[in-house]
Image (cartoon, rainbow, N blue to C red; front, top):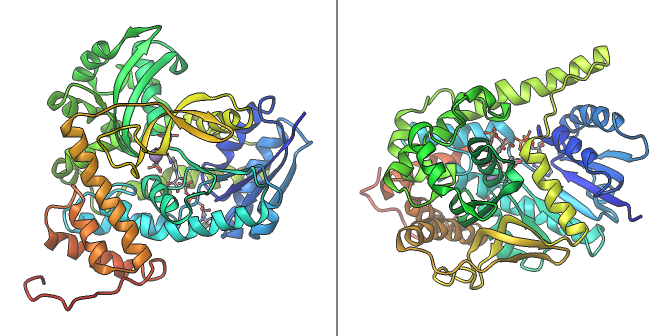
Length: 452
Ligand SMILES: NC(=O)c1ccc[n+]([C@@H]2O[C@H](COP(=O)([O-])OP(=O)(O)OC[C@H]3O[C@@H](n4cnc5c(N)ncnc54)[C@H](O)[C@@H]3O)[C@@H](O)[C@H]2O)c1
Ligand SMILES: O=P(O)(O)OC[C@H]1O[C@H](O[C@H]2[C@H](O)[C@@H](O)[C@@H](O)O[C@@H]2CO)[C@H](O)[C@@H](O)[C@@H]1O
Ligand SMILES: [Mn+2]
């Protein structure tokens, strides 16, 4: 039996113990001889590894476990690398959210200026990770990447390391399908969906169960409750925070306006930005909620385990862990299972640029994802996608060319930002906050006098 060596980059992530539990649940499909936890923050890594090891010990003692901050130790001879780095950690996420909000612009970790800022921090570390993996791991090694902002990361990788074996994935579509399945009273695996867009920027165009169109029923439900089960207590606890409840409820106003397709919940930031800002607490954002919630409870669970040997059932698997393992099993066993992932367009959607990194259904094989033909998309969605795509592509050019003007274009083009004046103010504040992380963005031209 083939045994795999797997490394988790960003091993100190709050998601690590849950992902490890998903891996343990699937050992028959993905037998592991080794798991290596790799992080640039050794202290955080070793604390989180306490929990991850305790989870593994519930299943087996035959997996070699390594914790390291050394890329060679992490990736040598590896078969798979899971990437889940948060460059700048929650401290920078908080600024990505609060700086735009201070200018009355959406403050979000992956959408709008916060996402662009996070992208500017993440592309070069991602390229470094790819280079390390290529240097040390097996030639067949795949990087399965969750690191956000996935859309910008995918574009950066496409441009800077076009031949890298990286598959960029996101759990938002599967989480959305989990809610759809709950509403329809079926299993998520029973849904057959069509979907197109960019990451955190797409639409479900078909939802079928056993060949039957269930979109009309979902439309009807959403028009009353949004994309939540009628009984909110049934919701996955990862999504029980008020911000996630509001997010799933906001599918209702979006579909009241545009009932054709079911939007990815993240479209709220582009279609309802003024409403989102009005309803945001500028002093207490999602980063605070996560630090006070998921992160705090993880470290408390670890402390309790170290003191008492009792491991609370805190490492819920959820769709996040299930999905990354499903994708990996499909690669490892060449199953060609159909999942929504990011791929280079190349004609899948003929009326979008061939070099766009789109999110669509694809068959996941050991040679990578093979996208299913989508066909032309309507003008409204095409126009929205192209605006966002341009913002993300120009941002990547800004990084590679070190260009302030291109960064300003990327911010100005983003639909969450009302004008170039606001774009400049937000960008300048973010440059100041990201001094440690961003490449230098040179100004080619002397600044005009109108903008203060
Ligand atoms: N694509 C998706 O749908 C999806 C879903 C959930 C989370 N995520 C992403 O997963 C990541 C982890 O999220 P989290 O909330 O658990 O964050 P976290 O801060 O708890 O964990 C991230 C870890 O990455 C480490 N790190 C930072 N830079 C690194 C580098 N260059 N090399 C190696 N490690 C590095 C940090 O030290 C930290 O331990 C984030 O990027 C988040 O956006 C993506
Ligand atoms: O605000 P956070 O850190 O809680 O979540 C941000 C991430 O949100 C999405 O992932 C969800 C996922 O949809 C859900 O099923 C579950 O696993 O929790 C995740 C975190 O809430 C999104 O897809 C990611 O890109 C975000 O990083
Ligand atoms: Mn995502």
